[in-house]
Length: 347
Image (cartoon, rainbow, N blue to C red; front, top):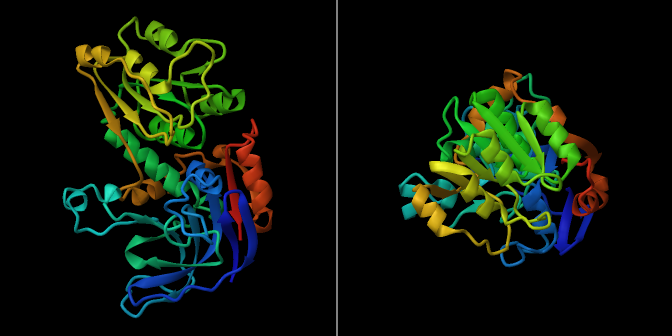
């Protein structure tokens, strides 16, 4: 089968790979569209080398068409348009047994630990496959995972209607969270911060009340000004690798300073840097820092919102390119093109 194959850091090439064979409880999906997200970039750069087995086929955000159904599978037929939740858990470890299947000790993801949607065919557990509503075009399907993650992060933060929320970093993930927040959670005030004007303008289009350019304003001071010194109910740190403006602290440290007493910080960026946090401030506020990882069964919620036209994937998908352009597409993401948010590869 045709596939974009990663042979090592920054070495991804389109070639031929063996087509997978399905087990009785699986379906074979012909991949039609797959996204490039921040995690895919980290993998491409070699930062997951201890986890990824080369040669590898990436692509954990994808959709396609069912071309084969396992003998034990019910509810799917050849020709069904589907997407796949890539998170595969053991359902036996302490994390799984307490509901944290996305923190499973032996967690595997299609497109990271197992071959994914940058290949022409993907073998997927039928329990992880979701039929697509007719209203969702295939080119938008790579956003389902991002929107599902947005739901999960907001749930981890306990965000309630009418609350004030700040999102630090509005790249692919931050904007996905914002889209779900503004059109599904009825926030009272939404503030975002970033260093890229195009992302900030996109955030405004999605409904952000205030968009802070970190090169022009101190996010902490601005948030405190907007809330009369009280701080926001919840801060979502979605920066990952830090690009700090001169004199500004790391995002997690900023988050602790801009939440109200009793507030919550949700951190979801996959940065490698150590982050200094003023724990006296955290303790005196009796605030919480909460981590959020991958999705935990939120695909149906994301699909319902997309089917109803509540979300805006067309604003986040800035480029649709053929799989043959995969090398150029990753180079575009790696150089942080200022007007690139989400790239979708079509197979």
